[in-house]
Image 1 (cartoon, rainbow, N blue to C red):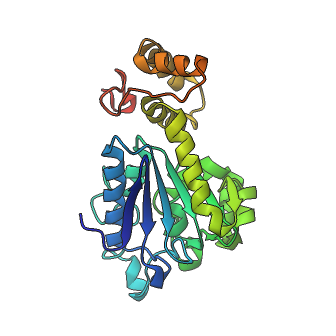
Image 2 (cartoon, rainbow, N blue to C red):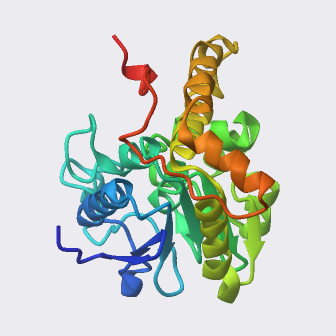
Length: 281
């Protein structure tokens, strides 16, 4: 796919996906959604990439949906939030992010409102510039939270905080986002991408691709279970399979020899038997 509304760049083990409609504060369109989805799947299929950063060009991250068409912007011909303009099942940026085997880092450089904030929720790590502003403004537009955010947001920040932000529709700043658990760090704007890259390099330089792919799926899929039974049904088998493999041997050797590891395992080729467990049967 040729990209018109995003940029996709790679630098060693890091892919950077930049929303690129700065004249519109990177307002979201169906075209943008399709391009985001394509770029995420592209980075996921590239063995050289270990982490993907998502950010915005200019002074905004994403100001929400492009509503230049007025109220009709939210109808059947509208942006198709989270689906990239395609049928929901198995498509769209929500599925691409949630089912990814590579960690994703949202580097929120400016206003992130509506779909501009909900598209960051399936990311594994969110950091923000001090100038960033956030808003789950749906109730103020007569809408409901989209892109799966009614599931993601309470999982990330807890139900009371999610209710407060969504029921009021208020805009709030980066420090409130950090205090509420939406972002893990707030940094000066000029340091934002450097910090995101440092996090990505730490992952790329110190962790095993297979372990990361399994770990992020286990945490996302089991953290809401009322009992540990689901996790216990797979973690022992995975630990035994990985423990008998070359990645663990390399990880232990690197630790004992005080050097950076060079894990041989690749995704998806070396994923252990039983993955993906949620599709079994």
